[in-house]
Length: 277
Image (cartoon, rainbow, N blue to C red; front, side):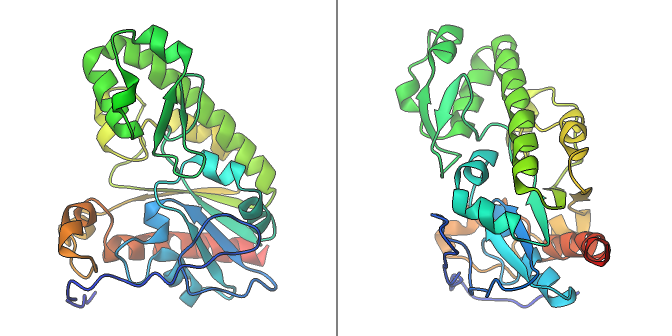
């Protein structure tokens, strides 16, 4: 596969809005008439720094439009709470739903921003009792909070992690049910699903999502597609990606061109089968 070397000029994502959704998605804007496939997900689905992310690649190969409803750092809450986006998903022929992290959601221990789900808003009394020594006003992002709590008290952190996993399962089941269309769950990561133990998962999105959790929600979906980014794709680094010099570190942590091609290759036959049913 050939890659084009590009300069530092960042991409124009041509931001657009659809229907009554409050979210701003990546353009160009599509006309949502007739059948289409809705691709819901986070930064990877959005395709940050990528000229043609996997929804665009699918759009080229499938007989119906594939609309990119990716939202940076999205958790399950942003999809559940945006009525306009839910309506768009409910109107689609099928939905691709990228598996989100289990730490970017509001839960009995803390609240996150309703649209910026990676933003920590407030600790609940339950979390303050679990970690009485912590001043939670110093935290602004969920990952920073998780790193600190796991480092201070791993045993207490295990209690918190289990609670997050339980809430994630319930919210994902609710989301699939509310969409009411065939949902293809997409695991898009550099590792296969694990058993959900250990703090190393803090570094590997979708954080805290285990094989057992996937099994608990996939029974309500049409398909589960697992894409583990290949060694070859990881070796490409940021080659072919477009970003400003100050964004190099962020770009290095995101899937590149070949990884998006691998996702499109895995999803294409599954979506073709659903469209023919």
